[in-house]
Structure formats: structure tokens, C-alpha cells
Amino acid sequence: MKVNYFTQQLVSHVSVIVAAVLLVGLLFSHFFEQYVYDTKTDELSQYGRALLTDIDRSTKPSQQTLQSYGQVLNSRDIQYSLFDEDSKIIYSTGLKTPLIELNESEWAQLQSGKAVTVRQEQRRFDQAVTFVLLPYFQGPQFVGGVLLTSPIEGPRAIISQMNRYLVYAALTALAVAIILSGLLSIYHGRRIKRLRLATAAVSAGDYTIRIPESGRDEIDALATDFNAMVSDLHTSHEEIENLENRRRQFMADVSHELRTPLTTIRGTIEGLRSDLISESEKDKALQLASGETKRLLRLVNENLDYEKIRSNQITLLKQPIRVLELFEVIREQLEPAAEQRGTAIDVQAPETLTVFADYDRLTQILLNITKNSIQFTEEGEISLLAKADSDYVVLEIRDTGIGMDSEEVEKIWSRFYKAIDSRTSNPYGEFGLGLSIVRQLVTLHGGTIDVSSRKGDGSLFTIRLPKEPATGASAD
Image: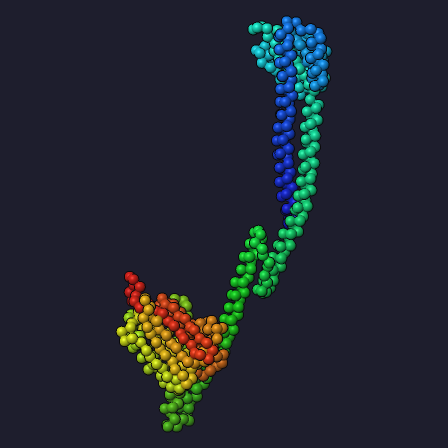
């Protein structure tokens, strides 16, 4: 069964108010009733003791004295009666019976010198009264006592009036509860409805929606968490879309890149088999096929490397490496490609400087970065620099190429990203995987890599790698 928020608020508020009113009303009524009757009993006892004191002073009180006491007590709506040791009434201002009717326990209590108090007694009198019996002794001898009675209509009227006030207060509280429940349900209902609509919008794919929040209560805390969740979903959705777009572009690029070399290789094989290529052109054709084959292998290897690194399936064989010798190897391998673009490669490093790393993977790192620098530098210079820091060796690859703006700098580490979005035939870094692999490899070495660049002013890649193995570590 569906119960709306207003009903829940109303039931909870009314339940609390009714329970509180009942509890407080019962406790207060009991306390007030006890207080009224205790006060009346004390009053009767005081008048009775005063009367017995006056009687004790005079051996035989006069009729006038007894009547004057009766008049005073009658003004207080109190009647009294004097009785002897046989419970026979010898003087009374109210009772018409000749004897005081007491049970054995009450009579024994009275004879022992204790007062007897009875409240709301209706069996022995014509109306409900509170009465007090006080014993009277002459020396050690019990000779009778005094009975004082007072109707309880007055106290009951006061208690009834108090109960009416409690009922009025309960009704007022219930009215306030209904109004408050309605206002709260409307207020919170609107906030909850706003959350529901926002959730439906997110479910429909709208990740830009936000809920106003003021930090007042748990619903605002929920709104804060909701906004944070939607923000994360928005970011994740954008990343997924970007990755999907890059994946599509990558598949298109790979298809194009595979088609071109495969077509070239196939044509070369068919030409050689059919003797369509002359002897003077065979070496050139074979060299072209070999180059296209290497290009295909590079594409496959880059993808395999990335997946191995991403799934932690790669093992680093770390050892001390002389940085200057490694720079010379890089320059030797890439200098022909750099010369084709009119770019020079300069190497500067201390002869004794060493770095603790995997030789093949560090070579791969430097080759990838330097190849990218060659791709975007024409008629310029590329510098490979090294220096020692406190615990790190700092490797810098600086170029004077076209540079990048801040948005491109943030994207270059993403898989499939290419700074120039075209199917270039340049054999260096055309698949958008190189720098993504570089960053993963540097992290596996326990190092960091940063890049600073400005459009038209070239780029600077800074790599920090441990100079020595960590304490207690050894080469893998």
C-alpha cells in the first residue's frame, strides 16, 4: 500500500502528540488529584487537632464552643462529629446517625493512637466525601475522638477543569500538527520531486542537470552527493565518448595504414613473381616492401606494448645505464630521419652520469619522445640533455618545433590521441600510442614525466628517474 509523505508526517506528528498528551495528562491528573486530596486531608487534620486541643483544655466544652467551631468549619464546607470510646456520637454538625461505623482495622488503628484517613467514601455517607478520624486520649485512656468530613465535589471540579484544559491543549496541538505536517510535506515533497525529476533526467542521458543545495539538512546533503555523482558521470561520459571517438579514428587510421603497406607489399610480390619489375628496380622494390613491413610491425608492437603495460604484464630488467652512451645511440638511430626534415640532434650529458632503469624500455621512451619531436620540428634543433638531481636523474628532450597549446598538452597522454588529426604518412608516432606508452613506462620505473610547451615556441619533455635502486631493491 502506497502511503504519501503527508500521511506519514501527519501520522508521526499526531502519534507523538497524542502519546505525549496522554502521558502528561495522566501523570498531571494523578499528581494534581493526589495534591488536592493531600491538602484537604492536612486541612482536616489541622482543624481536628485544634479542636481536640481546646477540648483537652476544658474538662467539658460548652455547647456554645462546639457550635462556634461548627460555624467556622461550616464556612470551609467541613462537618465534624465527636464520639466516645464506644463509637457513639455525642455531638455532630452533620451526621444524623447515632454511631460511627468503622471496620475492625480502622477502629484498632484509632485506638492505637493513629489517625484514620479515607478518601472518596460513598458507602457510609450520602455523598462522596473525604474524612479524617483523630483519636482522643485522657492520659493513657482512649476516650473517643473527632470525625471531620468534607465533600469532594470541589476538588473533583478542579480536576475536571484541568482535564478540560488538557483536552483543549491536545486539540490545539493536533491542529498545529496537521498544519505543520501539511507545510512540511509540501516543502519536502517539492524537494524530493526535484530529486526525482533530476534522477529521471540523468537516466535519460542529461548529465548537465544540477540541484540547488543550501546545506540545511540531510536532503541538501543528498543533493550535494547527487550533484557530485552527476559531475563524475558527466566526466566519465565525456571520457568514454572521447575514447570511443579516438577508437573509431584509430580504427580508421589503422585500416588506412594497413591497407597502404599491404597493398605495396602485395604489389611488390606480384611484380617480382610475374617478372614485371626489372632487375634494376628489384632492390628498390624490396627495400620499399621491407620498410612497409617494419611499419606494420611497429603498429602491432605498439598495441601489444600498451596492453601489456596496462595489464601489468611487463617485467623491467633494471640496471645502471650511462646516460651519455644512451643519448648517442638515440642520435645515431634517428639522425637520418631528422636530417630529412633539416633538423639537428644535439646531445649533452656528463660522461659519468648513470641512471637505474631497464635499458630497452628507457630506449623506447627516448625514441618515442624524440620521434615526436622530429615529426613536429622542421629546420630546427632537438636537444637531449641530462643532469643529476638529489635522488633523480633529470632527462630533458627539448625541440624548437611548432609547440602546443595548453589544451593539447592535456591530451597528448591519452590513447589514440594525435596532435595532427590526419592520416599522415610520417612513420613516427602516427598511431597516437607512443606517448601513452611512454607515460606508463616512466611510471613503472618509479619516475615522473612532465611537458611544457607554447604554440610556436617548441616543447620540453622532462623525465625524472631514480639515480640508484631503492633501498633493499635489486634488478628484476
